[in-house]
Amino acid sequence: MVMKVKTKIDDDMISAKQQEEDEELTPVSPLGQYLNSSVLSLTLYAVLEFKVPVNDLPISLVSDHFLPISPRFSSIMVSEEKSGVKKWKPVKVNVDDHYFVPEFPQGLSPEEYNECLYNYISKIALEELPQTLPLWQIHKFNYPTSTGVLGSLIFKLHHSLGDGYSLMGALLSCLQRADNPSLPLTLPSRQSSSRPSAKNANVSFFRAAARFPSTLMTSLFDFGQSILKSTIMEDDLTPIRSDTVDGVESRPLDLTNMAFPLDQIKKITTSLKVTINDVMTGVILLGARMYMEAEDNKSGSANSMALGLLNTRDIDGYKSVSEMLKPKAKMPWGNQFAFLHLPIPKLTGSHDPLDFIFRTHQTVKRLKNNYAVFLNAQFLEISRKFIGPEATSKFLQSTMKNSSICISNMIGPVEQMALANHPIQGLYFTASGLPQSLVVTLISYVGTLRATIAVEKGFIDTGKLKKFISKAYDVIFEAAVPCGC
Image (cartoon, rainbow, N blue to C red):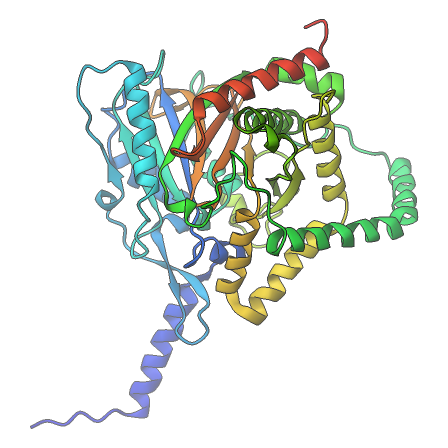
C-alpha cells in the first residue's frame, strides 16, 4: 500500500493555481448580479428582419463574428464559495448548444408565420437560459413574416451580459452598411449639438449654485418617493395591472409591433420643443390610459405609474465594444441604467392630450437634473454591501412589480444594415422576466420608430391596446401640429 503525504509545497502549488484561476475571473457588475438572481432574471430579445432568405446563413458566423465581440459571450457566471460574489469565468463554447433553427408547416401566409414567430418568442421566453452555459442563444427563423421580410434572426441575451446600449453596440460590431460596407454606420446622437461657451458655462455654474438648496430638497423628495414606490406604495389594480401580479414573469407573452414615421414624430418634437422619447412615452401613456378606461371606466382615474429606463452614461452615439471594454472607459460595457418613475396622467372630461407629453418631459428633465438617480444608485450599493445582492435584487423586483408599465428605448442606425451581405429590413427588441403585465420597447431604424408591445397573454388585449396607442398618436399629432405640415 502506497501512502501519499500532502506537503506544504503541494498546498502552495494548489493555492497558486487557484489564485491564477481567480485572476482570470472578471467581477460581475452590481446591476448584472441583481438581474440574474433567484428572484429576478431578465432577458432581452433582438430580432433582425431580413429582406432575403436566411437559410444560407452559416453557423460559422457565430464563432467567427459573434463570439469574438465580447469575452462575456464565452463566459459563465459563477459564485465564490465564501463571499458569494459573482464573477465571469471563461469557458470553451460549443456553438451547437446556442444555435437553434425551429421548423414550422410549409405554405402558410406571412401573417400566419408572423404569429408563429411571436408564439415562438413567447415559448423561448419561458425557458431559462442554462447557467452552466454562456448566457445567450441565436434562433434562425427561415420563414417570411411580412412584405419584404423573408427571414429573421432572434438574439436571446441575458440582461446580466449588458444593457441595451452594450448589446446594441455588440450587434453593430458584426453588421455593416448595406449600401457600402466600407463606410461606418451613422447613429443619431442623443446629445445636443450646441455646446455652451466658456462665458455661458460660468453663468450656468452660478445659476446652479444659486439653485443648489432647492435642487437638494427636490432630490431628497424624489429619492424618498422612489423608495416608497419601490416598497409600500403599489399602483392600483387596473386592466393593465393584474391582481395576480405575483408570478406574472413566468406566464406566456403576447407580442405585437407598431411602426411610426420618424419625420412625423420630429414635427411634434419641433413644435413642442421636447424629445422623441418624451413624445413616444406620452403616446404610450395616453394610449394605455384610454385602453384602461375603455375596459373599466373607473380606471381612468386610477393611480398608475410607468417605469422609464434612463441610461446613466454620457451618451454621444454608440462606441465599439473594444472601446467600451477599456479600463475607465467613458462609456463602459455592462449595465449602466436607472429607473425613472413616470406618473400616468389621469383622464378628465376636458383633458389636454399634450399633458401626457409635457408631464413626461418635466418629470424626466427634473430627475435627470437632480441627485435622485445618484442617491438611488448609492442606496443600491449600500444595500448590496450590507444585505447582499440577492436582497437588493428583491428590492429591484419590487420596484418593477409595484408599477404598471415598463418603457425602454434605444437608437438604431440611420442607414440600412446587412449581415454577410444579407440586407436587414427591420429591427426590434423586447424583454422577458419583468414582473409586469405590460412592457413597451422602442427603437429607431432607417426613418422608422418601432414599438414592440409585450403583454401578459390572456389578460391584456393587444389588438385593442394597439388601436388605442394608434389613436393616441393621431390625437397628439393633430394637437401638436394643427396644420399637419
